[in-house]
Image 1 (spheres, rainbow, N blue to C red):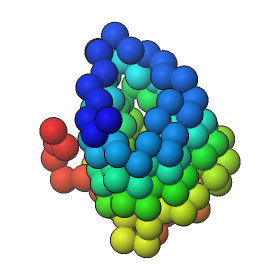
Image 2: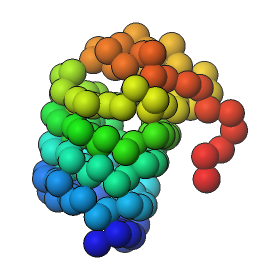
Image 3: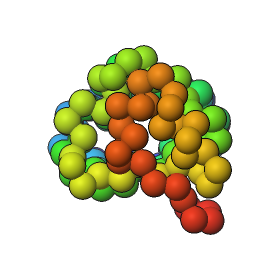
Length: 129
């Protein structure tokens, strides 16, 4: 599948749900989602951009591992979601950017496990969508 549109009522998605989906190019994660489960997007090499809803409070191991085509992550939570270690972004491309809400850059760059990706982070200017 190339595109996935989730219902706004979706609060959880099983771990590995899209793991190694080499066709997935676009997915819209809805505002009800609270967790990015382990291996959820691992190996999704065609994804280039992903918006993480403001309600997300946790991201588990290897969630974005080897997303080789990823150019931009847009994190909408003002407070950094809890990462379950330094494996969440294993294999992050050198030119990838992690956009965080205006005023939250320091919080993300100094949070546990997030500090490993501080050099990828950029503060957003205005709204993403």
